[in-house]
Image (cartoon, rainbow, N blue to C red; front, side, top):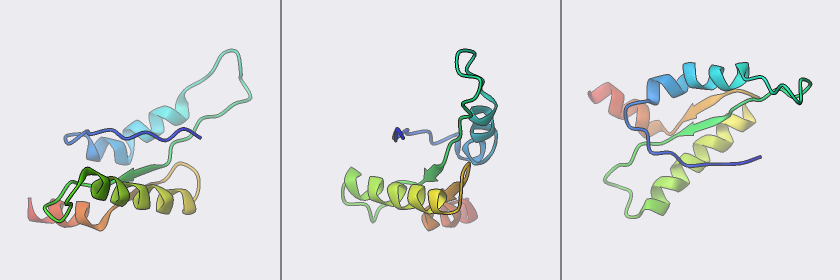
Length: 87
């Protein structure tokens, strides 16, 4: 399973549903039996992250939480919700 890191500051809401669902609807003409899914972990860079690696670790933890909740899930680092509440 490929894992990627994307920096998409204006797409958090879309990643929660629309983008994840778009992946699920993709069809592979040469492989009709294959269904795609996306588990997504979201983390927001914060002052407590001394390095990019710290930020990536939070995103990775959220990703593994999403995977443990089942296929096609989105999980957020707790800092994402806290930042949204302050906005």
